[in-house]
Length: 188
Picture (cartoon, rainbow, N blue to C red):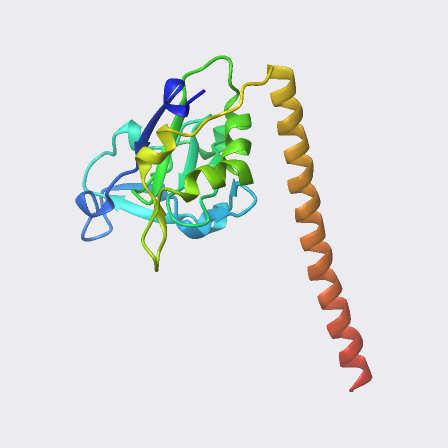
């Protein structure tokens, strides 16, 4: 089934039109390219502060259940949790709002991060230095249909994979500290 049959797809806000010149007015958190972890989640410490001359329309603010995808490579998709509501989505991202009760939003996020989906988007990349996918390309993505139980199994497996990657990264970091201490003791 094509993504546009069960989701509203739009582009984020063009920031220059709303930015306050004096860092006064309405303060928001702002998604950045750096805040998107390649494993499909937002790293809150890389969100920026943004001051707007006026109140930002709700359509440009994150809501629980939204899927936000980077338009530039890598086209990482993140699922918005309740605690991440109200963040401005700039025009560097596409906003996907699931309207189906058959497809789980978290499953859709996992699928959008899959190699199969990336191959679907590969033909629609424009630019050579900074490769970008057109927002309209997302409308044509074919999403496989599974039962809700199978979708949930896929979500659970993906969450385990991410936890494992985080733990391995932490282990590597600790090992590097350990090795530095050992080498420091040897040469002192």
